[in-house]
Image (tube, rainbow, N blue to C red; front, side, top):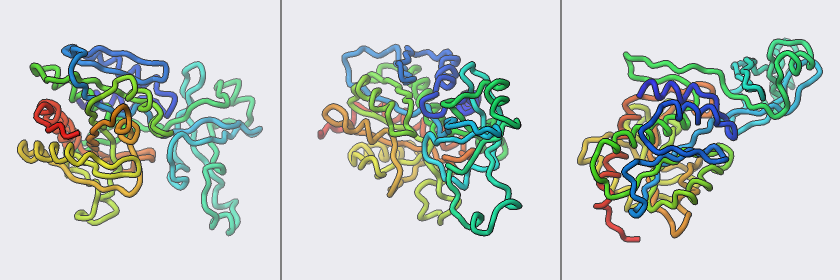
Length: 352
């Protein structure tokens, strides 16, 4: 699983430009039927699916937050537009990769005016994305365009390489929101493929463009037409900034079961069903009630005649920044609970 995590998290894939992540999934040579649509959504189907049983959809999104080249100034500095939600103060002084139309990657530094050249008023002013520029180490616009082939509209993503600390069991890298969700979908389906008859058809749907409005899931949920769904997320951890007892997402506290966020109110029966299975199987979990944020569950649960959705999150520190920490054991807990829910889904009382 570590090799899978490394391959997917290192892959370049801001919203709308998920091709390299799709290629990384295909390169795994998974034992599933695999299809990709025109929007970069990936569909994985168990070969035991019959097409005439209830469908449980396993969702995660492929994309990561990033940027796009908006303009290239005469001095060679590049202005950017955001793909997904960023806090401006988290962006400067980090390296990024710009992917050109030819597929070449160009390294750049997100620059802002040095304090030596700033007035006191400028230092006190709120930082805005529009004021940030990327420097690729040239002196004029012609070098950016001619030497590197960078154009307006090219995608940009953080430049970070994955690593794993065996002493702590902690993962380090970028795009844990939501490549760890994609890993959870794939690992869950691998384990299910080794089991006997599940009583349901299982379809993994790795969606594009979640960070810019859950657009991919709007398509995948219509294609899959699920009767049930499990949404996997790299959920933002808050244990580094809040008391452990009030934390809504703590690393090494197990998978996060989400009751509420800005995009959906959970299906109480489905959550109780999952918690009961977790308790009986000694799988670590934590409950979360989020005032803000959202997942693809917001799209999926209102499709068709409504879909019971369970959101399982892998606690991930510092999402929507360059660098993330997560615990491997929380990925394991997430996968373990998903497998339990799916293998016992026929026991779920249908009261809807």
